Length: 396
Image (tube, rainbow, N blue to C red; front, top):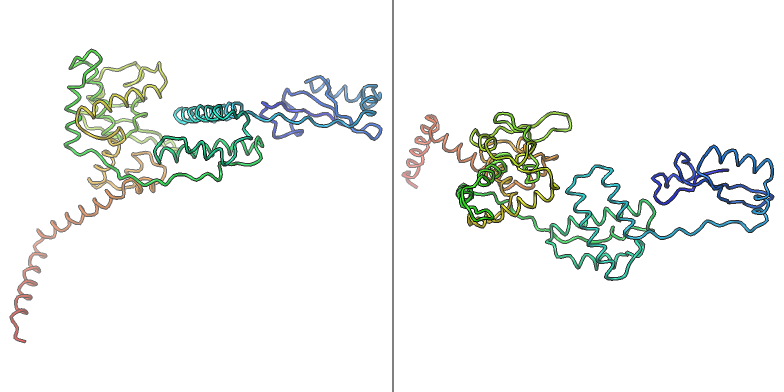
C-alpha cells in the first residue's frame, strides 16, 4: 500500500496513515516474496504514486526484488523535539486559536524564562524536563504568590500540550504544587482619595516639567473613564471613539449578541469627548504601538500620579471603586456582575462579598430609621414602654 509519511511540522501527523491529502512524502509498504518492503517512492504526487504502485506490483520491478532480498526495513528513530521547537509550535497554535494578545505575551515571556533556565543547565530537548527540574525552575521565580500561581497554570498548559502530541512520555508539570495564595481584600478608593487623585492631575508634570498641558486633560478623562465604567485599564486604553454615543458607552457585547452599555455622568462624557485624542480611532492610544506597550505607558503614568496624590493603589482600584459604590447604592450583585463582564456571578461574590454584607447592614439601618418614623410603630413602642414600666412596679 502507499501512504504519506508525515513530516514533523505537518498538522495531520497525528492521523498517521489515515490522512493522505497533504504534501508529505509518499512511501510504499508491501510484502514481496514473503519479505516486507518499506521504501520511499520519491514523490509527493498521489496520482503518480498510485500509478507507480501498480507498475511495481504488476511488473515485479527490480527495485522491489532487491528490496525483498534485503533485511526488513526499520522505521528511523525520531529525533527528540527541542524545547525551542516545542515553544514555536505552542505559540503558533495559540495564535491560530486567536488568544488575547496579553495572553500570548505572557506565554512568550514564559518561553524566554524557560529557555534561559534550560541554557544555564545545558538542556536542549523537551523530554529532559522532569519534575525535579521543573521544581528548580519554579524556585527561581521572583513573582508574588498570585502571579506565581498563574504562571504555574501556563507551565502546565504548555506541557499538557506537549504530552497530548506525544512529544514527551508524560506530563511532569501535572505534579507541580502551586503556592498558597491568601485572598487580598478589595480596597476601593474613598471619596477623599478620588478627590486627591483628580486634584493631582493638574500638578502632574510632563517631560519638560510644564503644567497645564493638554496631556492633563487627557489624563483626567482617562481616570474618570476608569472610575465610571469599571473597565480594565487595557479596555480603556484601546477604547475606540465609536463606542461612545452621547453619554452611553459600549462596555462589551454578550455571547447572545446583546450589547451592554454604561450610562456615564454628563461631566464624564464631556471630559471624554473634549479630551485630545491620540488618533482618529482611539481616545487613549495611537494604534501604532502594540497594545501591551500602550498599557505599560499608562500604568507608569498612573503610578506617578498616585504617588503625587499621596494615594496607594493601582488602576484596578478604580474598577473596584465602580463596583463597590454600585453595591452600596443598592444595585444588585447580578447587575454589577453584568457591568463588570463577569461570566459567573460567583466571581463577583468572591471579590466583593464584604461589600455585599456592608450593603445588607446599610439596608437594615435604613429599615430601622424608616420604622422609627412610622406612627403605628411609635404608638406600639410607647405602649410597650408603659407596660414594662408598670410591670416593674408590681409587688413581689
